[in-house]
Length: 247
Image (cartoon, rainbow, N blue to C red; front, side, top):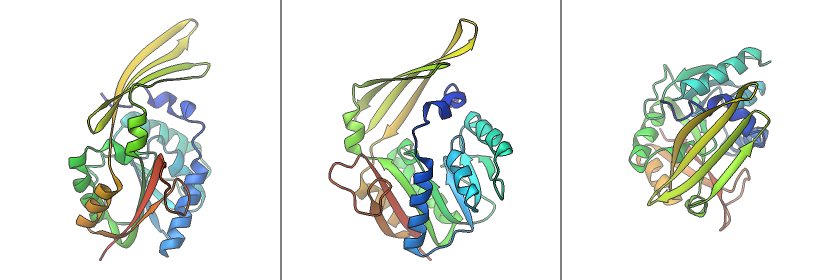
């Protein structure tokens, strides 16, 4: 079962506070900083496609890739109703199994998608990206910092709307934070359906990420504060990295 089987129909409703426009602004700022004008962009681990469509509205051509059939179904439905110059292409592929038909000018991976990779998978995923990001192109992604993930150990959180109630608990196990999620969704009348999921985010240091990027064909690595073109502070909870695909 997909990690997002129960969560997918409610993901957008539960994440209304995510500033997707700010993410797109930041990516465009980094494109300019590195001197590239993207033609085709890969949105890796695109989820329900909200950021994919935000970039498409700005005139970019997009491929959205995700390993969850359920999340992609939501993304595809939203794309059929979106007013965009060129509709994105959505494909069901895991990050480790990325296999495009050609190259892209840039790849982005948002909202801690890279944290879902265990340490042993970083190198293989960066190697797949090296194959499909054209020389001189960019890979931009964000991660939850190890300090943030450690601070969530033992915490419990609730999110709710009129139609869904979500409870998640976090437990740290060495280099990984496990989220146990219970989702109660309103079906009809007084009937509620319960779903359960477990998500795992791995702790990755900047040093490890930079080392793996450099080992797999990327350089000119920039490390940024959350959605700001400046170095991260000491207590940053989310950081962004940008790297150029070397010749």
